Image (tube, rainbow, N blue to C red; front, side, top):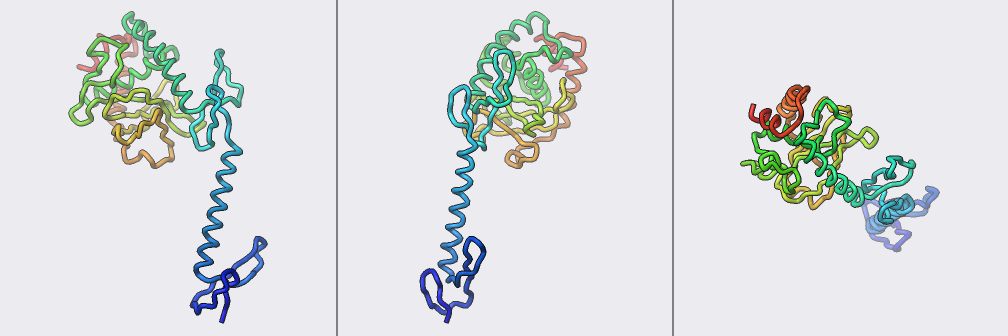
Length: 275
C-alpha cells in the first residue's frame, strides 16, 4: 500500500498524486488532502510575489508624496512652463484637484468669451476645456432633445448637472475625451455629483476632432463615487453601457458645419438647438 510522504497516511486511495521538489525531482506520493495543501501554498506564494513586485514598482506622487500603485491611474506632471521631465507623476486625486482648479479658472474665462463673440470652433487650439466640453454638451442636448442648464439660465458659472431633467435619464452630466494613444484609452475627471446619468463621449485622436468614436450612457449608481473615469479601447467593464453613435455623430458634424464661420455664442447655440 502506498504512503503519503507528507502526512504518512496509508489510506486506500484510487488516485495518488506525485510530489516534486523545486528542481522537479520526484520526492514521493501525496494523498488528496496534502495535494490541496500544496496547491494552496503555491497560490499563496504566487500572490505574495506579485504583491512584492507591485511594492517594488511603486512611485511617489510629486504633489502629495503618496505611493502610486502600478495598477492605479497615474499622470505626467508638467511644471509651470508645461514641461514634463519624463519621470514625475501625479496620483489620480491630485490630477483631479489640478484639473478642477484649471477648469474653474476656465469657467470664468469662457463665461466672458461666450458673451463677447470670441469663441470660434475653427480655432480649436485656442479653446479652453470648458469651451470644448460645451460643444459636446450641446450635441448631446440636441440629439436627446433636452435643455442645457447654463444656456437656459444664461449663467455659465453655476454648478449642477449639464442638462435640465430628461424624462428617461434624469439630470445628465456630459464628459468628453480625446483618445489617448499612449495609454490606449479615454479618460476624464468627474468633479460633479449632482446628476443621474453620465454620458461619456469618446472622441478620436485628431485635433480638431473629426468623429465621435464611442458613446457610453452610465447611471450614476454604477460609478461608485469615482473621481474619474477611464475606458480602455480593449476593455469590457463599461461595454454594456455603450450606445449607438450615429445620431450623435450626425449632429456633431452638423454643429461643426453650422459654426464654421459663426461665433459660438448663446444666441447662435439656441438657434442651432432649435433648428
